[in-house]
Image 1 (cartoon, rainbow, N blue to C red):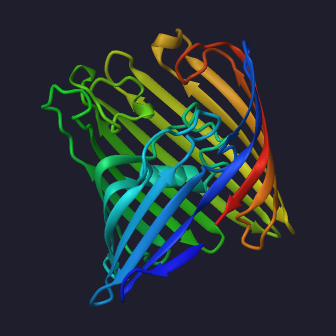
Image 2: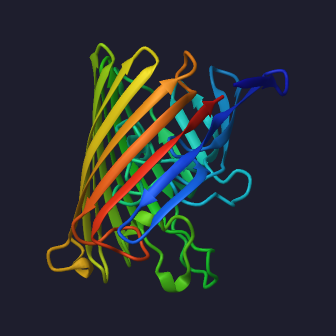
Length: 340
């Protein structure tokens, strides 16, 4: 990670991840093989800065640029600063941020299962797809005996008839506990959806389930460090939407990670249920299993060669748009990840 002083009191660090590898993705109708990136982690460059002010307060900022979409999706063709972009203040009062700020819901996705948004996580297909929202402000309390709370707000704008100029309103409350071997995180999010007829922007995320007025999302995660290199994790989220396609979805993932020397072994078993009437009277369900291996190439465990294998048994209809099939989905990925 590089660091430079940009003025007498400001420090800037540049870090990130580059992930590239080979993947074979098999669906009931098609097998795809390709060399691409972000199979184990999202390829990105992140610029962070902070500057000391008076009374123990610091000014902070983050500018993130992502080069691939999560998992096996196509390359990200967006512009510079297409990820988290925020600026704020931090001190004894906590942290205030504004811009495009990561949600507490997203932190649960990252911290309470071992595959982040990459292959094997189910992110965006079976889990919720919430990451961050435009035009948002967030306050996070200081840690008190291991407890932290957060509140995020993004204002609703629905008066424009020009596509893309409106924003759905988002409110989220988060609570976390980190002390010793135990970590727990909870997030409650409400999205007041802008009607499709007036045009949306990114605040209508993939997780809105076709809602016409609002959708709600609860996320709960926990991890416990058992010692001797073994950590257990659990992640549960539920989503409910109103409107023409009333939807109620739930997802549960149980995971374990074992580290010995330079070797990391990981595994997840997950289940997904969808009670949306549009997919049939009995709803939809699926289960998946993921196995992972990382051989770390540095002491900080940021660079590694890796392998991932995930298999999904979709018992009704696959969630994720486009053609849907009943059956098994298998993905094998191998690659190299370099953290800097």
